[in-house]
Length: 185
Length: 211
Image 1 (tube, helix red, strand yellow):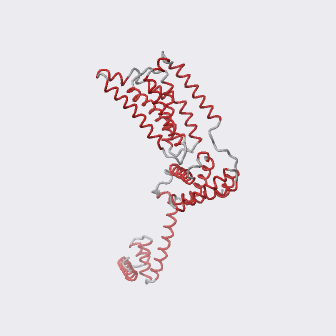
Image 2: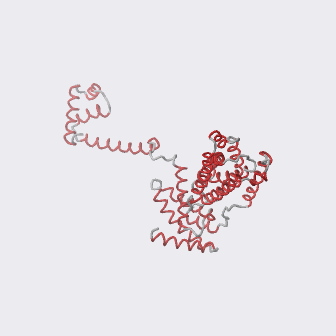
Image 3: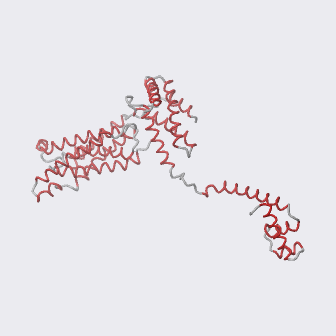
C-alpha cells in the first residue's frame, strides 16, 4: 500500500468509527471523501463513457450505505470500498456491454454524417463556381452544361448555338486551364 | 440528483442496513423442520439407529461431514463479504474431501478384487446423490436469502458455496437414512450429491444474487 493510500485509509477509517458512534456529520464527511475516491476510480475505467461516471459513483455510494453491515471494522475500509466499486463497475459493464459495442454501427450515425457531407458538398460547389468564374464565358458554360448539369454534347451545342466540335474544344480548353491553375486535380 | 444531495440524503436516512432479520431466522427454522420431515417421514430413518450411531463408519462420516460443514460455512461467510477472498475455506474443502478419498482408495486396495465394485457403487449409487441434492434445496433457499442480504461479489462462486453448505447439511441428515458404510462410496456418491447441490447453487446464484 502506497504512503498516500495509507494516509487516506487511516483518515477514512477514523471517520467511519466516528460515524458509527452516531455522528451524522462525520458520516456525511466520510461519504463525500469516499465519493472523490470513487469518482477517480470510475473515471479511469469509464474513459469511453464519461457520462456514466457520476451514475456509477452514486450507485456505489448507495450500495456502500445499504451494505455497510458487511464491513468488518478490523479490515481496511478502502479495500472494502473498492471491492464494492469494482463489483458495481463490472455489473455496469455486464448490463450495458451489449448496448454499446466497441464498434459503432455506422447506420446509427447516418444523421450526423449526412449533415456533415452535405455541407462539405456545398463548400466544394461554391469553390468550383469561383474557379469557373475565372474562365472565358464560352468555356465556362460548356463545362457547366456538360460536366455539372449532365447535358450531352449535342444538347449543349444546340443550347449554345455552336457546333459539337466547338463545345468539345471549349470543354477541353477550360479543363486544361483549370488543371494548370489548380494543380493535378 | 447531484451526488452531494445524495450524500446528504444517505446521511440523514434512517434506512436500516438489510441485516438478516426475523424472516431469515424463520426460514432457517422452516428448512430444518422440512428436512427432518423429509428424512423421517419420506425417506425413513435407518432400521437400527442406535447401532448406526455406534458404527465406526458412521462416526468417521460424521466427522468428515462436520469438517465439510465448517469449511463450507467459513467459505460462505467470506463470500458474503466483498473484501474477503475465498481463503482457507475453499482449500479446506478440497483437503477434507481428499482425506475421505484416500480412505476410500485404501479400502478398495485392501478389498478382494471382486468386492471392489460393490464397495464403490453400494446399493444406492444413483438415488443417493439425487436425494442429497433434493433434501438440500430448502437449505439452499435459506443460504441464498442470506447472501442476498449480504454483498457477494462473485455471484456464481457464492451460490456454489451456499450449495455446498446446503449439500453438507442435507448429507448429514440423509446419513440417518442411508445404510451405506463404504468410504469409497461416501467419497464418490456423497460428494456427487454435494457437487450437484453446488452446481444448482451456482446456477441460481448467478441469476438471483445481483445487487
